[in-house]
Length: 399
Image 1 (cartoon, one colour):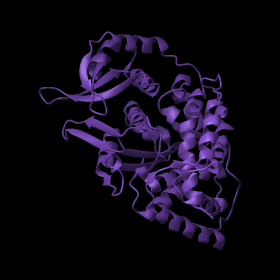
Image 2 (cartoon, rainbow, N blue to C red):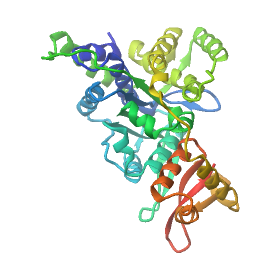
Image 3 (cartoon, rainbow, N blue to C red):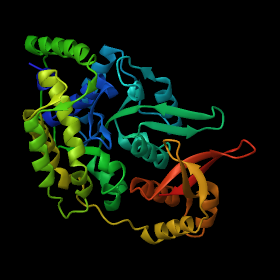
Image 4 (spheres, rainbow, N blue to C red):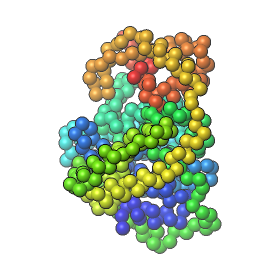
């Protein structure tokens, strides 16, 4: 038995579709092992954090699957965990305060800042500041350090950010909110959209069998063991050759709704394979069996991926968005620092100034949606600067 198989056994008497439980359990295991394990790809490292969005109509039991994950994390008690009604600024502070020093890791990987978010409804999670939150989720996903300037607390630094997201939403919200070109970029390249049309079945009186209770006990025990693992993954020679052949033969479909997923599928595969290796064999070694199992799990995403984005249309604000980008392109270059603190040049404008320029073009609500859209497709970003008088200003930055 293993963490993932025992988790599925425990949830087998639940009405939520097994696919929801599969991906929820992966988020749970990722939260347990945290940023203490990774695959070194020389130019970059891949950590096992995941953004999973459970998609289905009302009544598909999305939140039931999520609640099991939340129940586990509360039992373990040592996993930094955030609720869904939170602003970007509060989330940044929470991650900063969750900072840990892990002895036994290399100096440049020793400090980590883990956080897991479980969101019953993605639209409510984004409603406080959709543009800011999507931009943050996009930026922090694979960064080694994240800096955020505030008015009262100075610069808040997240060292070794490791953010997991488990969220629920409906196909209708995706159709209305995430337009086609958003899907192919930014946040949506980093997220796994898991679609099911209905619950697994009706269970009038759900019963946790003795076998299921025993399985849950093994889940808790395994979680304690897995949390102690740390260090880089190694590859078997066969696994390295398997991955090379698979990656070099990967075909990207000519479908603007799914291209984002397939262009980053290799990253998702290695994340999932790491978790499978830990669950099944408790080793920091990638084997062919782990990669094959990872591809099978990702196949659960792909079988309904097209249906997730049915009815998607082109952004009807293209002309206004083009004008906004042109305004930013005309801005003079300014000296700044990137996320790693290196000097760089940017073109940016204070948010309020940009709002005034665009006032005649679109109303305030439409402008906010357009900014959210452009952040999601990696055209612009949000940065906070403090001027010489100590005033904090939010800038829109051209990417």
